[in-house]
Length: 272
Image (cartoon, rainbow, N blue to C red):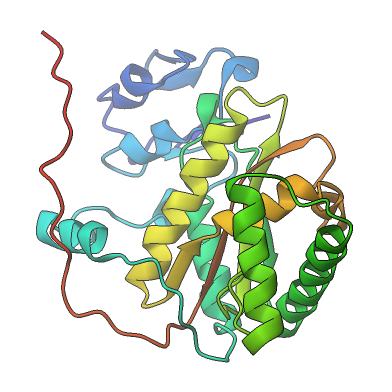
């Protein structure tokens, strides 16, 4: 049951909730009514589009939502965030405060998903000691594989050899770059857009974390290790029926950037 309710003392009968419903399951009578509860995709568009906060659905109180007017970043702030984000490879030896981490994960989980599937799973390492243990495990696995001559040819083998030599020679952590936290996104393989959903969620977390002063890094080298040791996904608690999107390390940065970079011009293919 989606618990679609109308506060008739607030409703101005504008019909916006019915017009904007992606599934077309709201109709206007004297007041809006739900015509097909099974067809509702639980997107809450009706709650969001109502100008007078008269719509409640899924037992959500519209007055508890953030009012958008006056609370959205301007174009300059968004451009600065997008152009100014960096791949951070230097981190403080401290955990991100737990309440901030909870806030980031809860907010990032609002990222869009195909057919509003909402199936993305955030697998997170919340404590730096846990990631240190995982680092030791992955290094040991790579070393054992290398000793047996099992590292693959090409880029993957070269990068994992670099991981191993940097750690053995100077304890330089190329694998996780000394970050205290790891985030992996995954989705059920049965979801309409599992890999795309996972990527979008992680990209959303990326920008959100950087807006709060954290550093992030899309960890392609750890993804290479996951490809060689697929049992690690089960070891990390990722369900067997999930497809992994990508992995990201993050934490309090030990470096500060002062300006955006200057790239471009953008590569465009204009359809005519």
